[in-house]
Amino acid sequence: MSAPAIPLTRWAQGQLDALAAMAPGAALPEAGALLAERAMLHGLTVPGDVSCRGGCRFHRTRDGWVALNLARPGDRELLPALFHTDAPVDLASGFAPLDEAEAVARGRLLGMAIAGLCERPASPALATSAQGPNRPAPHRPPRVLDLSALWAGPLASRLLRLCGGEVVRVESRGREDRLRDTDPRHFHRLAEDKRSVALDLRTAAGRARLAQLIAQADIVIEAARPRALRQLGFDADACVHAQPGLVWLTITGHGIAGEAANWVGFGDDTSVAGGLSARLHAETGEIGFVGDAIADPLTGIFAARAALEHYRTGHGARLIVAMSGLVGEAVARDPHLSQDLTAWNARRGHPVLAPEAVPC
Image (cartoon, rainbow, N blue to C red):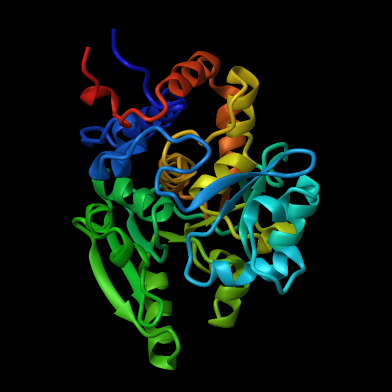
């Protein structure tokens, strides 16, 4: 008998099947391969209370658990402020007297990627913040402008490229994609067959060139927090209102509404915020992560389908995809999740394998 696929693989495959139906002849990877892609590149194992890559860990609080992601340079420098101390920080003793909700609120106020085991997503999987003028339904593959970095956005544009789209990826000089240095193999796989343009968005010339690229695009993909775009002089909603048929895809950790707009989120912690680890705990009694930053590939797959679906109608819109909300929706809709989580938990410490790589 084969080992279990990564939980939510069936849900993700349904999204890929819907994407493939809009692009007959496209050779799309299987969902299991995409969810396991990075883990397979590096021989990672099924995680426990530490994520596959080691940057995100669960910590016990007074009344629950939090997942704290220290993936960025400088994250550890925020720990004294998180615990209101000038003394050397021990994470176990620091979290122990705090309530889960208090720890999460403190961390998010400091700009840390943190999630509580018992929280619920702050935003839906998909929202629309602007509707633009329509144009006749197109009869050609889309021109895609990818302004995103790391995993979810680049995967969405990679899938659109496999569906026939022409993809231009923009890398900002001075704020390069960290994945290029931290995981060059994965970076190059995601960037394959895309045209790359490097712009210095700190200059007027760089911003003017970006405005030209936006005007030529059918689909724009970005994953910046709202204030980052505004500081560059770009208003996504205004672009959608002005450009007939433009589909602007914003990928966020937790949406763009209210306080959640400023919360930082990456694939491991947003999967916790979406309720996936809580469901694992409910099914097995164990605390742990599910998959390798699973919110990233799930979001990339879903975002590609949503963007192409809107593009094909000719209806311009700004689509907001919240990674935590998306995980919450997938958790709620996958009827096989309970059995998959139980099987997944039993394989802790074993290699993460895509279905086609699993021995019988």
